[in-house]
Length: 297
Image 1 (tube, rainbow, N blue to C red):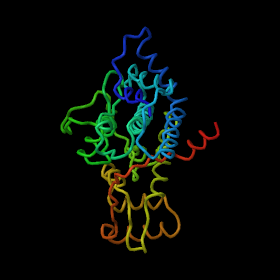
Image 2 (image 1 turned 120 degrees about the vertical axis):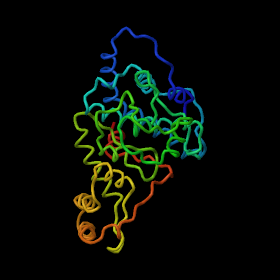
Image 3 (image 1 turned 120 degrees about the horizontal axis):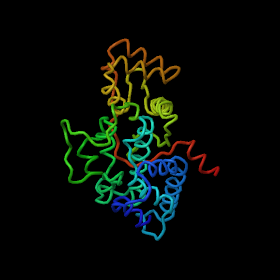
Image 4 (image 1 turned 135 degrees about the horizontal axis):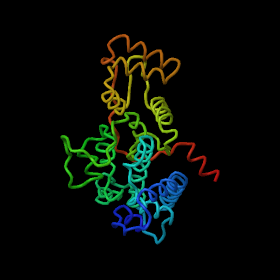
């Protein structure tokens, strides 16, 4: 994958533009909404094709899609603080997933946890250097899906986890816990990647939650209930008891599974629930609606 793609992960500070920051933000956001998914996925498919052919680490090339390049550089002019809440949520979810995907496209997936190149992955957003850990913990304000040492080693070398009252300049007013089901860091246990828009972000997040639960929760012989750790983070943020969490989970399931979970909730749920730890094995799963749209284009 292009060496230029690597450069885009740490873009230079932009020169002063003649247009206002606000108008530039609107223009870039409009382009992102209409074209980002096509170009990121185009790059992803090209990358996968290379792996299938060579089964080796990505090789540098002399080309990267010009629109993808312009969108990344255009982020320097975006001011997220001028967005509505719905716009902020959609923007940061999409940026998070695109940023991590971009890093893998540029540097490859072999031994990716230890890769110095992946560690440096960041975008310049409005003059601030932003990485995926910043987006999860400091901007969206949720508990990161991976322990601080692992994710910070992966995406933010040399930065220690900050606790206390320090507030990121782009942090949203209050957390939206449903984003747990939208953020993908490239692991097998992560949610499917979707493209979110401001108009439908809350509806799409609810759908993402339901589909994630259907795909990851399972009951073994009505005596063991296996659930992904992300549900634990969500429950903690929402202050849900185990019984309340199981009721929510059961509403997303049907038949035998739903009946078994409701039975567990009436007894001693902690005795039957087993949490599945987050996996570090690589996978980027694209939602079928996006994939179908790309193939139909």
